[in-house]
Amino acid sequence: MEVYKSPFTSEITVNTKEEAVDAYIGFCGYCNKDAISQFHCSGADAEKCHEVMEQIINDFSNKE
Image (tube, rainbow, N blue to C red; front, side, top):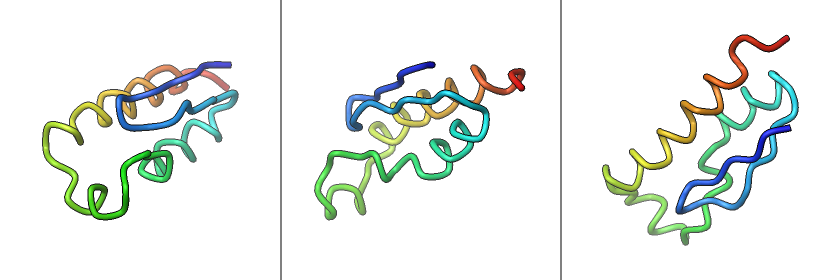
């Protein structure tokens, strides 16, 4: 089990490769910003989340 969190999301718990894919695809669903802030997500904020998204995929890419 791995737990991930960006400065803008709640904790994301991933146990399997399938959950990792779901977390990656639905990452913005974990966002704690209000709808307007999410819609206008800045490049700097998005980059912080993208780093966590990439970590999820990297951690589970070789697991079965």
